[in-house]
Image (cartoon, rainbow, N blue to C red; front, side, top):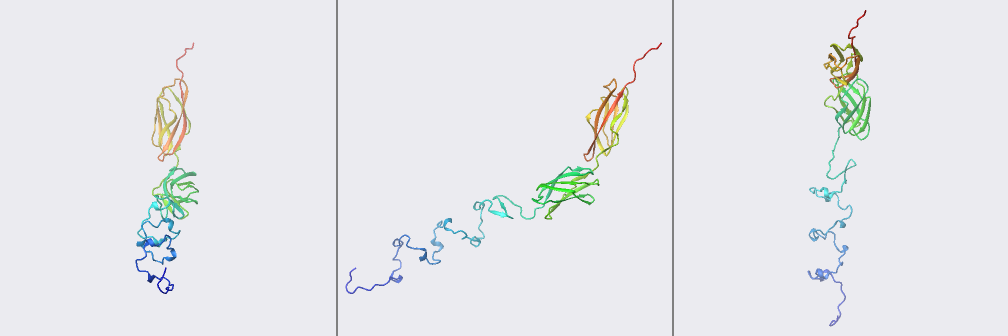
Length: 295
């Protein structure tokens, strides 16, 4: 540049030499403004375009709890499946979990009726624990407590015990986990009862005349509430009548005309559904018929 007179001395251009509004965005070269030239806190919210900041621009770990609004609701769609755990157990999104102590439950036992001998009982329920062996007590209706002789935890829903109960009555079942959490049935699920006991001996009920009505035959079994012929059948023409403690056989046989023996078994059942079976036979005889003349 040519000057008239003396060339002016070189001087540094300062911000005061630039009139406000003189430098427009068109006069700033691309990439000319770098991070070091932007003062801290200089960029305000209003200067950030909507959707301008993407996830790639957020440093890992940059957002902490205090950066999340207390009223913000984070939906399942924003969470990875099983990303939430409770007591080290992952929870599936949309699923549910019971928080707190989980008590065992008892839904049924099998069998529900036993006698006074060593018996095996299967207890079904929930929450029997993932490890360890529960304690099981059998509590009589009078309050007497008998621990199970042996206990096996088959799964979280099934326990098998053995027990010998000498007193005939009803019993409640109590299961206690190693954690101390326990349950007792609200009703007495177990009944201990003697099986029916036959008084009438097995085998032959006698040899009877097949030509006439027989005298009443009594079949006696203690504690039985009903009787039934379960194998074979009583001889045709005879009537089998069930009763409490005693069954009877009456009538006149019809099928035989010569000596014969009929076999059958009778099952006696008590009020608890326990049974006892006994086998019997009845033999038939016939006297001499016709006549003879002697000289």
